[in-house]
Length: 266
Ligand SMILES: [Zn+2]
Image 1 (tube, protein in one colour):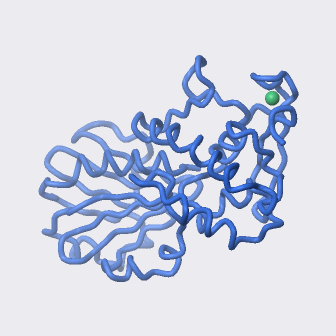
Image 2 (tube, helix red, strand yellow):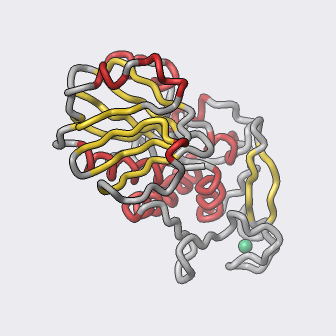
């Protein structure tokens, strides 16, 4: 599932392709959007800005219209030079925006909606999002306040995935950031000190920023190939730090798998 770093990277690429360029065409090949008349409604407008908040991406057009996208489990943004081969099948494209030089494509997008700027600001789901871990200035106070208002009996790993506490962390960063801070993801949130909660976030943020810069090639374990992790998907293998066997188990209402080292994390 694409996490905040992947979405911020996509926003940067989409921004580079669209902002300041004349839009030649907009297509919505998926039948679900056939009646939405986006090509007519967006025709002739320029893209003013492209930004991300957590895992949400916003294309802001001239004239108060914003396209909101969330990729959920399997969606993807593609940015291609004109004539370059797409990395997914054409029938999987939900949105295609063309300029003279680029094609910007959203594939398999389960959430794709056009809204006015003011609705995007007051939309309840969007307004409920916690501070973005990749914001230019991280709102640590806002994160802690939301975390303390959350159910204190929830494991911290589950609380980190809740986008109302903090936006942008997904399953990979949940496991890796708890490892880096030495915090057991099963520890109840009420028993996690502010210092420990901030250590988790401060550990993840620079790595996610680097990943957003590079394009989602997550490397948390230095000195290994790109994509190497400390605990994520390493269940049954010895910990790279202490040799204890890494464990994995589903956590929370959504039963998302959490990976941790019982030797390093408490
Ligand atoms: Zn360990």
